[in-house]
Length: 192
Length: 162
Image (cartoon, rainbow over all chains, first blue to last red; front, side, top):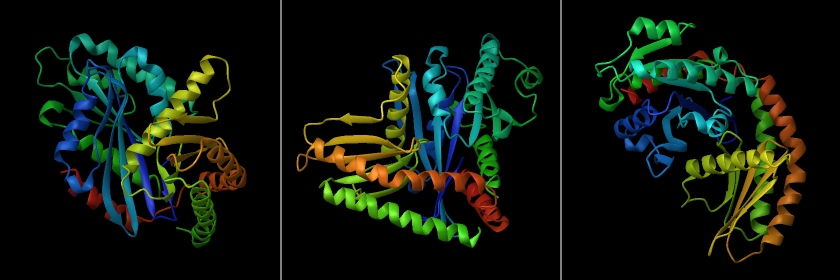
């Protein structure tokens, strides 16, 4: 849950980017880093392997500023997507307030998306959480590539809850801020 | 937010802060940080001006979580403390009430033994209070902010994530 520190008047929210390996989670967070006013963000930290795959997580703190006396911080994390890094993925989900699922639109990655969203449910269940209780948005990434699954098919397979979803080309910053905004607002509304 | 809730926490956070400052002073440490398991700073004592706090808090929590899983792999319940020794500075990390992480950064001005003893004392003192605080936080989670807060925050979000 979001941590409200009444003493220092701070609200901290944890938002996690989830999805299959090489789907573009880190690209999303790097775009946010490059576009957000430097005064409103901290350092982008990446714990990755020599091959540039995320090993543990990427982390970017973003400050919303002060709202009615509370300073509001969003902590953005990515998880490693590769199947064999599930232990790290589970750890990052601890205390998650909001989720952005970055799906890879390419035909050959269709099954990986489904495996990943099922894996998300399994991992949340270990913390006794249900995915539907946590604000979620979906980005269908890599829409600029030629061999992609149709939006309808992706929606049918990955979005039975009918949560906010959008098309994305994270490398160009398309569809990056929309899901983040959507989830951040839902996380704050849950504090009400 | 409910007045009495804020009042309760003000008092308890002051006790926590005083305890951390006492720990920092008595062990001659550089700084002491209290972090939740999700990697967010709760409060700190000592000199943290040169420290990248969000990164430090996140990595400490991740470090602890990874180590707990390592413990599990060899059939241990938990490793309740971690120690990272450097040439000039070292970090001693310990879990309080199974819920919050206490990290002490210290130099050769002091010894690991002293840090360990004093951290244990502080942990014992604060454990009950944390149990109580977390119970209250969980039961009074909703209603923390009002509509006006949400509307102002949403406007800020729109301009931040343009």
